[in-house]
Length: 91
Image 1 (tube, rainbow, N blue to C red):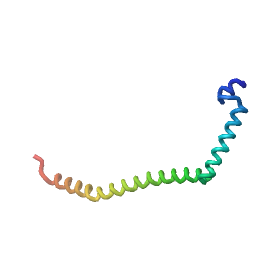
Image 2 (image 1 turned 45 degrees about the vertical axis):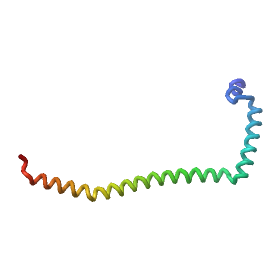
Image 3 (image 1 turned 90 degrees about the vertical axis):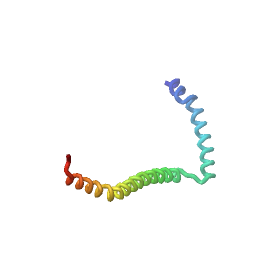
Image 4 (image 1 turned 180 degrees about the vertical axis):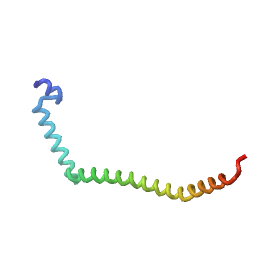
């Protein structure tokens, strides 16, 4: 069992824990210097997802606007053409 854990972790559990603690302190110092916190990272991710969501729906709304604008011309023209072709005798 101990050999499989060591193989999974890549080293003994104690050495991995010490390495992770050292890297955590280094990353914590860098994040503190930059002004990041777990909360700001979380808020940034949420804001990013919301912006993507809004951008997607803005694209749909723009497409619907173009659809309605084009339909204002195409549908009456289609009806007019159909009415004119219905009245003309087919030979």
